[in-house]
Length: 86
Image (tube, rainbow, N blue to C red):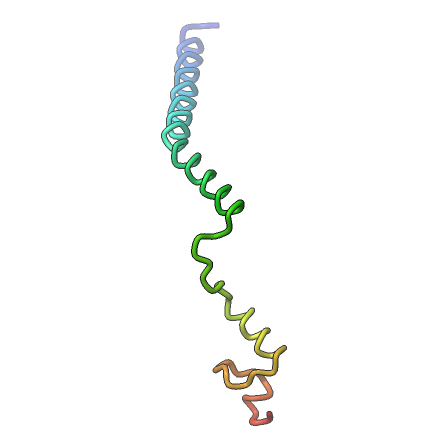
């Protein structure tokens, strides 16, 4: 092993060590937020959501519900209402 290879190995090792320490630092910096979020999730699962408002549905879910329940005045037009048939 010559000096060139040895210096490249040393530089690579310190580069990997620096990358590892940077990643560990980022995880440790976000750890309090992660713990708070986990506690909030546990509390909401245990006690229920504090203000359970209406659930959000996508347009596809809403149109499927409208077709299934027979609601025609919802503003969503399907093939039957577009042709004028009800």
